[in-house]
Image (cartoon, rainbow over the protein chains, first blue to last red):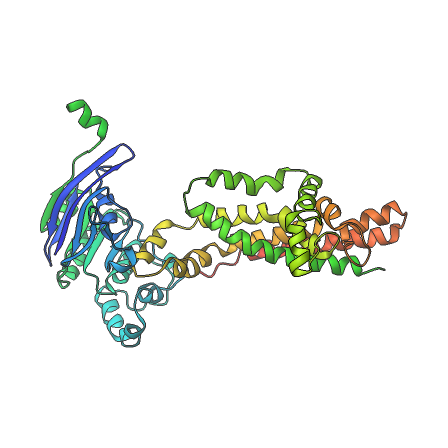
Length: 218
Length: 219
């Protein structure tokens, strides 16, 4: 379970949002760019600090403005896949995925890793560098890297925007099926209505929160 | 032929590069990745040696570390070190003159590293130190090596500040560029030619190596 209630002013934007996602749900944050969707998931990951509110991951308070709780990103145990996937270019697929695993996990992790690689169709690619992968392969590698540590929540920022449109539809189906086996809250940011239709089990709408705009309306 | 200036120049340039790397890499990272009060002031200050005349820098250094200064006296009394008119003083002068080149190179190469990779590493449980050594540094190394080569070349060619701080003592502080000046003044063109050809060759080889290096990329 993921609970979010945050507010933040940011370069002329005003973000003010409250929602929650249950385990196994795929919540799609849907809205125009600049409405604070990315900011929201970056706040959950601990990469941005909201001005006010709280964030609770799996019954653990990781952020609370009034109590001064602010758990650093490295201790939040979230899986985060940014829009450009941000694979480590100097590491192979396997090195990328193993990067976040602890020592004990690394020893028996090889078997699990092989199984995961074949499940997403990356077998045979484990020793390739990111630049040798297609867009879809990059995305799946980044997804495995985010999931390799058994995170308490998975955050995906525009996961399909960097792949060609024909591949996108196939990928959506694959990823949705794959994610169903993970019983954690999944938050997906998008402005593509197709993503919403195929992926969402829950929709959280974001509106344009330009400060100037709301001032005009007031 | 007198090889002493060659040996001295190489030694001084080596230590100056080391010193510059130790200071320049953290400084470049700081300027590239942290926003703090006074960062633009620090940036300006670091770039100063690039635009100030070397003699002016040398004069500042003399005032700062000379025997009359607080730092100079402290070094003398507690560590029995005197930097003025020694090869260590020449190292300091060369390091400060070449520091901007190093900081610039490091800052630019770290800025070119995708911040998202560092962010992902944070969510994967890594400390800031681990991220620096396993993500930022390996991705920025080419620019850092380039900065080091330029630093070395600059330190080898240092003249003005070195002369002010370390003087022109044959066998002790007389580096190649100072020895060339000295040889020409004394009409010893054989020695001057020898040093000029050598310093040109070293510089050209260094830059060629640098060119090759920036082409290597295993990923």
